[in-house]
Length: 229
Image 1 (cartoon, helix red, strand yellow):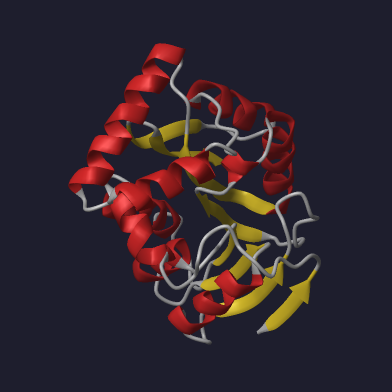
Image 2 (spheres, helix red, strand yellow):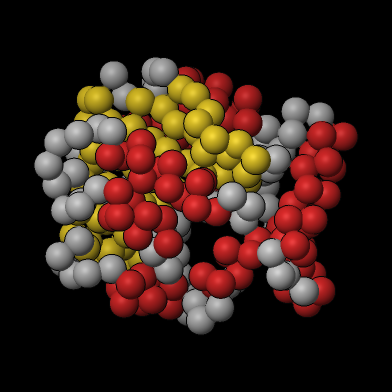
């Protein structure tokens, strides 16, 4: 396994020690959302596919992909070194092809990859940054490859966005998130730059993906994908 350090964050927004448990409480339909990303990669077929995980964090999404695709070769890409350190403990060395410590505005590894995946990371970019990243992801995919993003999205109207926010809180509370945990989540989400799903699908098409589609959606959480022809 190789490691490339482009930029390094000593203090992640999330605590690696508590991230996984909090994610399960704060993300509705957790297993369906994460599992659907793995299934889309598995449906590509082939042996030992190469997968680039953008904003890999502690390796939650990479683990879901590995569960669906035995023998996958994973390249983890994240700006928080401590989060990636936990990912290394979760994933076997045989699965880890490379780890890059860099933020999402950095140059992507050249590939070619069979799949580029991401979970709840790209919404930290502004809209031009999202469009630029989609174009860069398209470039590092092989023909026939897929880009899959598990994302937090805005509704098509402010009223629906507020409804989705209310649904999110009700789910999190029911899953066991207490006042302190929910307030912490709200503090982090205040810095998010979410965009409507329809806009993001249009940006994928603009980047050259065809077809594009939303695979799973639960309120403000969606899994959408684009294929490179």
